[in-house]
Length: 119
Image (cartoon, rainbow, N blue to C red):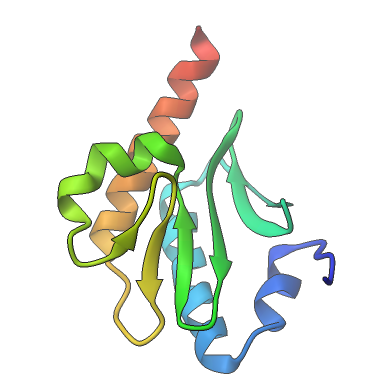
């Protein structure tokens, strides 16, 4: 498996339709996570404030969005249109990204990460 050194390199390694969807997600994240640093962690794009806020990864038919288990349980009632698990949400490549939901999850995760550091 190829080891990625930055998010741009990661995105460019996928088909054009997947690149477009990941770039859109990256822009949504960047608009909210202004104090987070883009990194590669576990060979996936990630956003770090104090700890990791979210990860994302490309798959054949979906973009995996990983906002940790708390990010899932807090927004579970809004995830009924998506496949999801304990720590991941699948956004189908062929459907629009749920921008407001992603932004809300990000705000929650950024605040959660900030409060975790204060303890």
